[in-house]
Amino acid sequence: MKSIVILLFLVFVFTKITNGQELFVNFQPFEDSDCKGTSVGVGYSFQASQCLSFPGSVLSYYFVVDALRAGIKIFPEIWDQNEPICQGNWTFESYKNGTCIPNLSLDSNLDITTPYSLISISKEPLLPISGSVVNAFYNQTLVGSDDCATDSLVMLEYISNGTKSDFGGRQVTFYCNTQNEAVGVLCSDGSDPWGGSSCDTMIIDTQCQQSRQDSLYSQDTYCQ
Image (cartoon, rainbow, N blue to C red):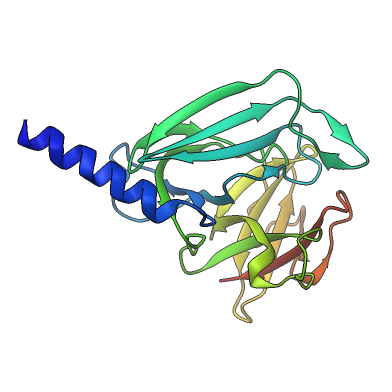
């Protein structure tokens, strides 16, 4: 009985604290099923109560926080003037804060499935692990916000050093170089990204600029 009372009290306190505040739902990447050890792969941080979609992606998301759980409504590809509208049929998934979940992939542009992700809820977006390529997205429609002002940050994606993805029939490896620039190395025919003859190296760092795929967002790509 005492444990039930304590649990109810914690739920009540959490609800009061989060009421009226902007919250973020975070997915921290891991290789192990217990979500411990070194954080590697692709991680995400999403502001709750916003319709969000990665530019050029095929899905839209709406995250909700209810007491000690984080929920996500997943919408099909429905767009209105280059903006996700989060309408129509949707599927729903709900997770307890602190849960370790398998096989997460939220950005279809990357084509990367993270083996395991630790879910957390926070007042600020979870900062990525050191040595990560970061894609930060800012909502241009928020009143009183500069293009990439901190208070307009709605979505953050980070990719740890050495993470690989398929891209247009080639494989791209993401990393931060010695100048702390975000780099993508595209290789074909199974070439070694660290010196293969069929590889092209691209600096993918961007200063704050409007997304070329979605006018709703400003985007900033950098190394953490």
